[in-house]
Length: 289
Image (cartoon, rainbow, N blue to C red; front, side, top):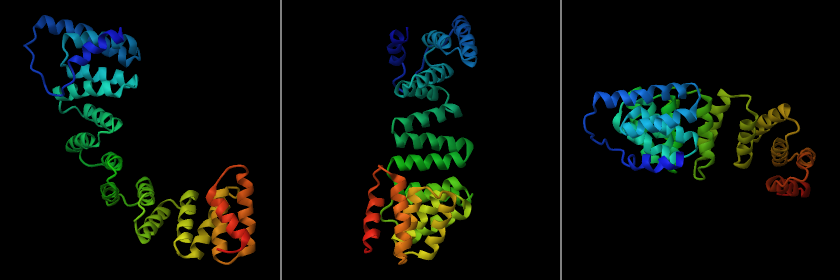
């Protein structure tokens, strides 16, 4: 039944523009509601297949009804047919342009279909209704990242941090974004890491990465060692942390200790291949850079 009616439904929802239809009679409205209310109730009760079948009748009776198109869009999202769902959401939005839920669904579908400009359009409309908030900022970050617009992605982070400077999630996003920016200034990366560590001081992965950044970019090796030591105190068997600590010791001229820790790192990895760890091992065990 689904396959047979899919082309019928899609034939009327390819354009997001509002389509004028003749005035409906009282009898037509009554017949529509006769199917719609039970379909809505079945949906709320989790009887999705039965609800879907009734919504199809509702769609044939009034293909421009915003709620029917929204429900049909939701059904196809559940079937992982986002491209089909998008057509229904667009028709729903055209007939109910102030519906916040529809704008949210449109935005998410546009993002899933990798249509960042349309996703931004939907987010702009949501912001007009609700104002700029956490979800606005995080969504804009991901949309700009999708567009490979690093500058605007970073601006989205900074805009939100201006209102909530200790938000750990956004501080993490800022650090992660810097890691994907090969031309980023080291001082900016360091500043971002320090801000994150101040807000999230027990995150061993962040501590390790910052310590390694300092070690590989001629930073403060004493600070790097102190941070790396903290990671090993929390996770003494982590081969990545052992490798970082060994490399920092080596750069400080602590050859004996460096060999001890890099050997532990290699032993913990076993048969796993970690080229960087192996490179550090070869250098440290030979005792030369």
